[in-house]
Length: 561
RNA sequence: GGGUCAUUAGCUCAAUGGUAGAGCAGUGGAUUCUUAAUCCAUUGGCUGAAGGUUCGAGUCCUUCAUGACCCA
Image (cartoon, rainbow, N blue to C red; front, side, top):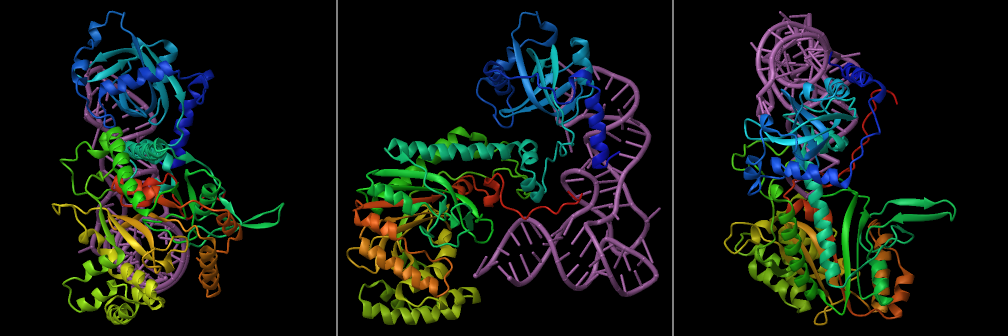
């Protein structure tokens, strides 16, 4: 038999054979002591997840052989999912790694032996007994007790190949997690990263807060929101695209350093870098400016990557990485680690355009250089010339985007996106040129920065940076605009854009302007895409690899329910 | 949104247009210190869906569904 229904029936029959106990008993409960016992044993075993630790082989050497047992040895617990049967051994998977049990029917009581007889791969089971050293030098729990803990009615994926089908991995993440242990380790690493971010900010006196996810006004970022509705109040609401405007209200209220880690929602496409819901870290710091945040960002990412590397050595240096085959990374294994140890570049947006254009045919360097002057007349003419040149050279998609850029600032931003962004990894390298380096792009045009403070020296620009790693935007920060009348004007501008058909434009947030009129201290704010940071740090090819349940179209039902 | 590729047994994969196969898992048996346990036997398929071409389609064509990758 081999259809799914037949495989399930065979397992159900095994469940019935358990008699009174039944396939889903409730009698096994793990105490902290038992979990520590298990963890110590798995660590002693040395598994893929734990890695081999110094001194462990010696510790195994000290274990007695089976025929050397005196009966005085301490009992060890091992419990989890049965993932393999080899001769008289069961391999049991735990969160800390795999461990094996030597289960001989004649060493067990009658009930235990009967239960052992009907164990299926994927079942939950528990054993206890002395830890021994096998003839091949491995560690094993020689079971004096075996207990059925829970039945798996569906068969697990092939034990050697795991679950490779990408769609199935995402749809049935619960299978992916136990069939491919490194997937689980990656999500533990994600948790470590979030905790390290939190620790870093709390260490600097930041207060963690929670602000609404349901907004009645669109604002905080230029993005298409999800719409919903509150029935009792008969109120149209939007899922937030950013927490920014609420967090800055807290600055007005005197909470000088605040941060929030939480979900944002943007009603946009799905790709290897985008999921409609994603996790953002935003923090706001009174009496600081954009440059302070740049320093802090660099320090924070170094610290977080240091903590993550220390906590997850097997992801940083995957076992067997030396004999790496050239097979694609289809089973969700980590593909490496980015330490953030290299110095970050800091380049103005205009300089980055120059860097890109330098020495290239077809674009007149002096024309481009003129872009960098603050002389409005000069750069006005030069820009048109360069812009026209670029329009001819770029692809159709970029050309359409550039055609919509009507003002000086938006054209500069358009040039950056079209010319520079795709080439950031080759433009900015580590000192020895061996790897790409993170780069802060600074000084953004005001047109694309409706919430940022103008530069004192030139009001066409704002004090803002975006951090690009591996050519992907991970962070965005700026000195905050605290002039209420300037802010009101920017909101007006957003309204005009909405009337012009821009679905990403913000609403006029009158209460926010009122908050600013009460006086917001000079401040700077920072936002970081947490999913992207995890993805970049552990070099995952897709954001879906770091989201437990990425958005997919609902599976087509085949059995009519 | 555009292009390329994929979809075959529970899982991982094969099959010049000519009888749909293997390994694992399952089932029955043997063995019981194994490391992807081994040995013998054996069950299992509407080849993603619907049309078409053909004497004959898993394979060629069209449409659709889902996913992956690239481009934007």
